[in-house]
Amino acid sequence: MIVVTTPTGQIGHRLVRHLLAGNSKVKVVVRDAARLDDDVRAQVEVVTGTHDDPAVLDAALPGADALFWLVPPNPAAPSAEEHYLAFARAGSAAVRRHDVGHVVAVSSAGHGWTRPAGVLSAAFAMDVELERSGAAYRAVSPPFYMENLLGQLASIRERGTFTLTCAGDQPLATIATRDVAATTAGLLTDLSWTGQADVPVFGPDRLTPDGMAEVMSEELGRPVGYQRVALADFAAMRRSQGASERAVADVVEMFAAQDEGIYDADWAKAAIAPTDFRTWCREVLKPAL
Image (cartoon, rainbow, N blue to C red; front, side, top):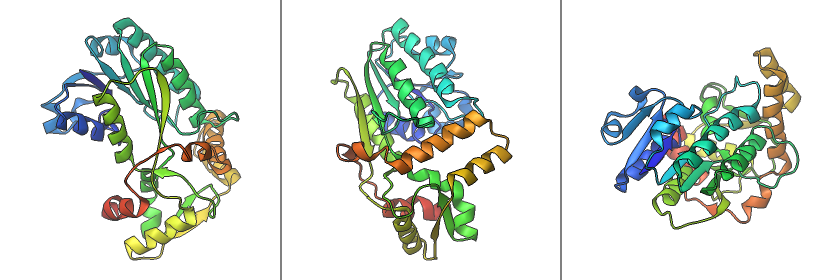
């Protein structure tokens, strides 16, 4: 039996469908079971609650062969690291209590980066804590999600622009969430692996943001341009929205690390996923617009 956390998220809902298609027995931990698709809810066992709650994990993990772990984002958390570690400590202790043999988590590319990287550093701290459970562990480690651009649909539609904080002429490693889900499903359905390791998985492109804008323009049939936002301006905007100084620093450090090449070392050794940026624009971005 495979336990899946965040089964209604971008990755989790695709993962559940992969597992069910392969006839795996699936139990999900979900805050609101009504958010599950009806056909999925009919095929899975449901535990209601959040997976930073030991009681919820004690209900979910007895008899589990494997656990899928993803920490849900919380921009309002005072500290990304404490947010990730609160979940990871609960998970690691529960895995030990219930002798779960295999854990697969979504982390980030860039393991081995020695400078502060905000939210990405928090994911690396999560990995360390989950490894302490003693289970066989794989940290699926993607770079920048293509789906992050869906938060800019209004700007793309109305102004023909999207923004990031990274240099427009430097390649940015990307991945589609469906490929993260497929990679994770493969690990969870073949538990012959042992030990603890990270698994970088990247999309096939080496596009710059300027290059991404060109592909968007071609696929959407309208001009789209890239505009770089200075980190200082981004930080000022987040402060004006009420974010704490630590929350601002967590995101600024992440973006700075991306711009400084945190993903570069993993690019050469990553598994290459099938979905390129052009395909994603055609199949995801254009319909969303």
